[in-house]
Image 1 (cartoon, helix red, strand yellow):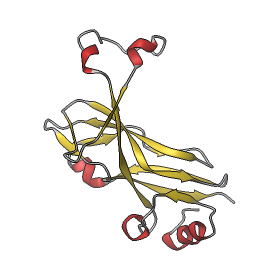
Image 2 (cartoon, rainbow, N blue to C red):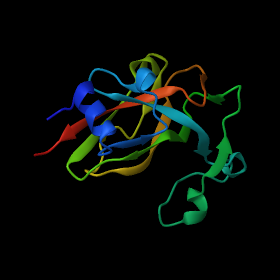
Image 3 (cartoon, rainbow, N blue to C red):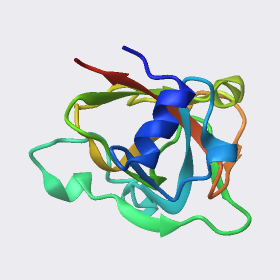
Length: 157
């Protein structure tokens, strides 16, 4: 069963669902919760680019992403570039609730794709990590605290 805003509010009130930080007026939608970007992002180091010809899960040296921070001016995602950005919100769900992650439509209009959308595990706990790809021919600027995705919550009986 897909939860609506009234059901989500009740579960937040009794502590079954934890979201921190959470601004009900800003983030709660009729049947979803908006998630925002934190100030942390990860990318492949630029100095590795000349050497980087293939990513190999068995070679950890080539799979090292560097951590950086989003300034007040934001970060620019160049065309055909890939970034990983943490969600600002820490989420703790009970075992009978599963979240479905969906990008905000305004990102799609700018050519940004969330690569890792879909179902997350029942009882998810932690900060969701967004894998972002710029499919546009133009650079796109992202800011910390920007609504980037939404989760829909389903409850199993």
